[in-house]
Length: 214
Length: 400
Image: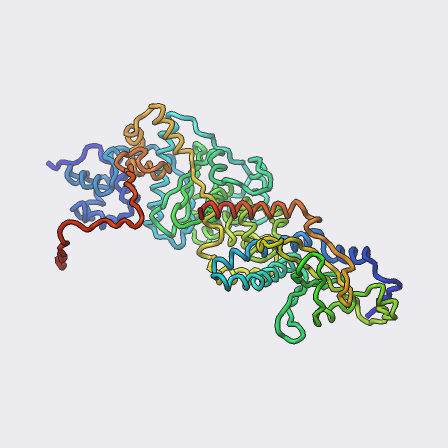
């Protein structure tokens, strides 16, 4: 396999290019809607099937499953490779989708500015996420015999205390030690009309359900 | 000399019997005659005695005039949905009631001008085998264009067909295996559809209506024998479904809306397009969106969630009711052009049947069907009324 030569650090702009080359605007929009769907539908699903207090703790788990299902559906829709795999100690499974030089997983974080937890598996997956610092310390990605595969993470979190709405849905590229994000795509800002339409649909539905309930 | 009923039309007894779902043998019992006598009445060899005639009217719940007048009804090919699993008797019920929709329309047309038929004329092969998927997709797109619909969701499918001159009625059809039927009358260019009001959700019923539109666009030129051939009939049904799907969910705009092949995404799309999730999955299959194994996974998932019987949003999509016949009748009655009795007499139908087929509320025509609801005084919570009066006595029912 042809070795990949990197003469300089990979800049933020280069990561943006890699991300947009891997994921077209249609795919990014689809990922946004799939995650937004999971946020909207999970509380309703849990309410239908579980009582409090158990319901409270379940929402996160069920939302994760629904996000995975939605993203897997996006991968199938756009003929991307999707792979389910266990973490390093086998305690849970996670979904990856692949396109171009990017492997994307998804993860809930606490706030928009929170850093991803450097879980062992993520560190392994982020081995090719070089930044300037690593090049300075003599780590040369040109030595690799394999094509680089950068880890992107679709990060999301609820909007404040409301559990049926995402506060943000972004795609980030973390550096290898998970100390900073080298690139961030803010999907809400990229597709304001689509997310507004999606929110309006659900608001109308919620109003109708509330009205019928009253 | 035998006393019969002067002017009795035997064919109408057969029609009335079939419309009520009686076999000749079953009807013979309440009429207190032999099945052979029924056959003779129907063939016009004999006419019923006055006492039998009274029992016919009472049993079939049709007015006397029904049996004395043969309406001038244009014949045409009737297209069926669910022919395979519906009984012959159920089909007859449907066909008779569709004929009654025609009679109501004819009576209305004597006093009102209904929207003229506005179906596009295409050069379609008369042989169903020559109608391919590509042609169906193109014709569905051209029909949308002809009606100026663009390529977005259709808000009200029933209203759309009515505005374009297709007379629609909803009826429970008295047979669960029947979904819908339609008829094209080539001489005066009129089209009638009867859609089941019973089991289907609005999302599914909207497809039934478009399925019938598919027949009216694609199969107007077919002969009855095409429908009697089982294999051809299956093909014709598949073509009408393909047309319905293509008309409801245009290839380009629908495909660009399918952002994920997951059931959650389809629930979201159902809210926008107002068609059943199962139908959208089928549409994805026919448009080649996703792989075969993806479709299989989604169908399995659909079944395991119990969505083949009842889907999310089924109770949230407002139902569509035809309004053309109901508005026409109300107008005629309000303007005192005819009284309710005169209207029913003219179309030779029972008030209840007119009310059901025209989707009028019960009691609009027949005052005896009006529900009288009176508000009772509400009781204070906790105030249990004292038990007064004698103790109840138990009576045992006589054994059979």
